[in-house]
Length: 418
Image (cartoon, rainbow, N blue to C red; front, top):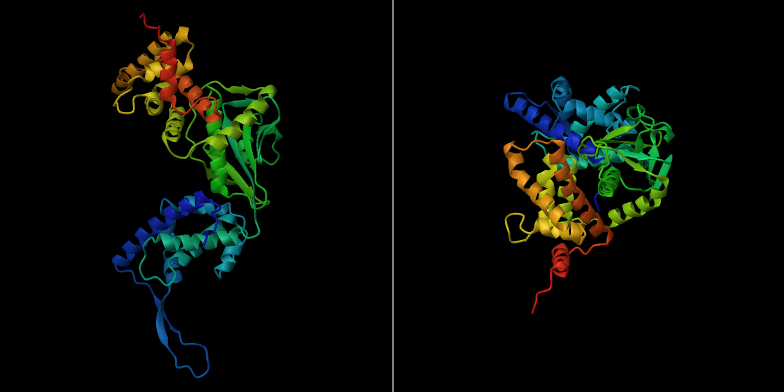
């Protein structure tokens, strides 16, 4: 049987962190002598003439309620409550758990919902431990109640380092780039700069949940990083909303963008970018050398300086171009130069790449500092790597890069005199 679709991965992880911490706190109290109260109930069938069958049932809800103050002081409590506040129908969840709503105040509703969630997690339990199965069941019940009849409508995140000339650039399948001034009812956090560029993902009925929406936005970021040396990047947080509900902040884990110039997207470049994003979304591999190299390239884009990105970019290039049986960067420079430079300029680029490789040890030792000359040398490595990854993913360059480079070098070698 298929598992229920998860709407909100960020909330799942936030609640899991709180429940795990609460389990430690409660287990410590029990081991220290705290007793769970029990009630005597008749568990016999309700049919006439059935003999009473009494048993003791732990009053978990009462035990948890008495310790609400201690649980509220746990470091993970506030993030858990904040995650619940943005949900569309907490009252529906409280009703499903047989509880009365404390009123219209979102904070009070979230506090009550978190208590109800803990009770669902440890219903009839006498020991407090984190069980992934119990948590999954309780979380599925929560999402079923709060998202009942709701469809995710909009996901918005800022795009740093990209300036669009048009007011809106449609990228297809509900994804578009817009200028901040053109987005009505934007999240308050995005209203400070009305000319900022935003990525907006509109989800139709039955569309993907937040986890899949985050995956699509990260694919957009990959495409933008490959598109331009300015390395445009999504902000670390996206905002999502369902039908008329408040905006909900969702962490994207996209990393940071180092200070750099902006990429200006002119109107005549919109069609090429649209086609490029579509190609990257369809052709980005999930495993293998190319996938690993692409991820390493993106990690380099997230470092605070180009010098800090050096090792990431060298490892990425080594996976694609260096001798596979070698421990270092053997033949990397020559092969990269063969692919990225015309014959007359290969020697110059090879020398620059050798210098970049030589800098790595000095950077590790703290001898090499990120001055403009050093950053320019490392930047040339990043530009070459970006071009190679881009051309392979677009199908302009064969993925067998070592063979391609060696053939280019062989063609350029002077003919032997017989």
